[in-house]
Length: 252
Image (cartoon, rainbow, N blue to C red; front, side, top):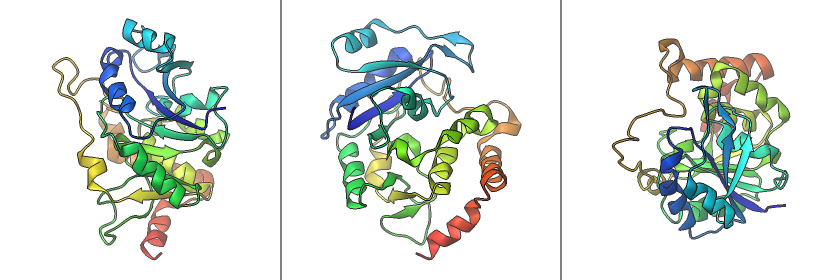
């Protein structure tokens, strides 16, 4: 079993540029047991087969990374695709990343330090500016996935996959975070501008503002509406009220 992994996914139109994100993960001050790229056989959204580029296959062949073929769960594949991997157990520490970001070398070390400082029993992510009254690190109601986050399989139950069949699959930061909370685990938010601002999108003419994993064209499925739908789903399905949870956070 792997003790620590870096995990990410991509889409067919962006897989050729994945090397930039991978390069930044290779340069982390903390090194995992494995870097795993979750690659579905076919993109459900785009109805397109994945073609593995030569550089990625070579990295897999020499053991730098591992290509894990899995089902397509939308943006959440970067985490949920890993759950079918035979060497991932409940306690494997999983660092999750976007495929269109370049990460500062110490981001994983900061996430891991916060995890161990909290008895290895919380998810950890950047939450800069989420709750104005807090000035330092605090528990939060969701993590901002683009800057990377840390979690474990033990924080989830199998019903998480129900979310991937609904519209809320496109707001993965929220439905994954709320699932952790409704299972009575906490999210530790790093109020660290370094995590947010030193994580940047590389400028590529053929990759700029194109085919986002979570971009939705339908006006009824914009980000705000999806978040509201996610709130409603968790309240009706689990009697978990995110607004009440926010009030709880403001008083601890």
